[in-house]
Length: 88
Image 1 (cartoon, rainbow, N blue to C red):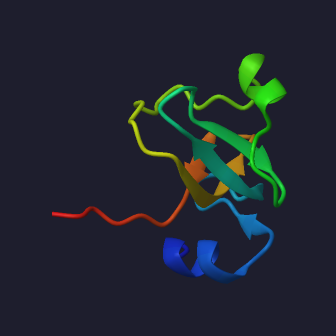
Image 2: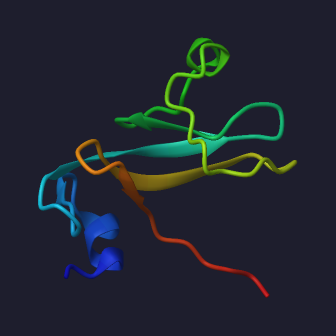
C-alpha cells in the first residue's frame, strides 16, 4: 500500500491504493455558505459550480471557516485522499 503523505505531497498523477486506477489531483474547497466541493486542476470551484452542486462532497460537514485542501480523487472507486491534521 502506498504511503498517502508521499502520494499527495509531490506527485501530479497518483495511483489509487484501493483499486490501482489513476487518481485526479485537485483542490477540495468550501466555506460555511456552501457545500464542500472538489474540482480537478489548480483552481477552486467557482460560484456557478457551487450553485449547481457540481463537485459537491456529500460526506463533508459545514463549518464557518473557509478552506482549501490539495486532494486526489479516484473516479473508479469513489475514494478521495488528502493529508490532514487534527488540532487538539
